[in-house]
Amino acid sequence: MTDELRRLTDDMFETMHAAKGIGLAAPQIGRSERIAVIDVDDNPIVVVNPEIILTDGSARGEEGCLSIPEVFGDVDRPSRVTVRALDRDGQPFELEATELLARCLQHEIDHLHGKLFIDYLSFLKRRAALAKWESMKKDFPQNTRRLPPNEIAGRHGEEAL
Ligand code: K1U
Ligand code: ZN
Image (cartoon, rainbow, N blue to C red; front, side, top):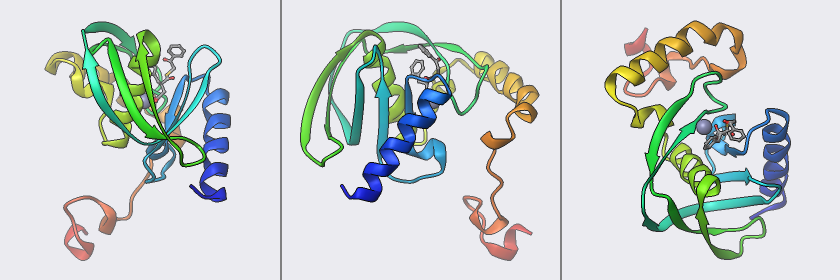
């Protein structure tokens, strides 16, 4: 960890609290670092390079996402997880979590793998969620990043034009 990355985690907490979220992952703000911040029940946690090392049980719970506001869905996830990560100072730690904290950790670690909660929904529910987002996204212009053609995955420079 560097001072710059510690400042990034501070900015992420500020952004997350302003948006009334309980978690935020770096890719949600256009950063590629494997860093997430979480604050469930006034317990701020930074996870750097987190890995889920143990899971147990299963629970269904409603999720939302700051990247696609106003879209919600019920997701089945392990009800208990043990996560290994580095903290804000680069020190390794392990955290065992249940309930909302377990769900939030999994949601944020999914963001670090490019996965959204809607990817767990059935075909029809996912389609409905995406249709809702299509109708809402004009109200959240900052949530859509426009990529130049040469940055669109699978396309290269002029080929994409
Ligand atoms: O990563 C994010 O998009 C933040 C997201 C995290 C999350 C929400 C619900 C379940 C798991 C993970 C949010 O914070 S969205 C805001 C929200 O839905 C919420 C806020 C307070 C309590 C519960 C949910
Ligand atoms: Zn999210």
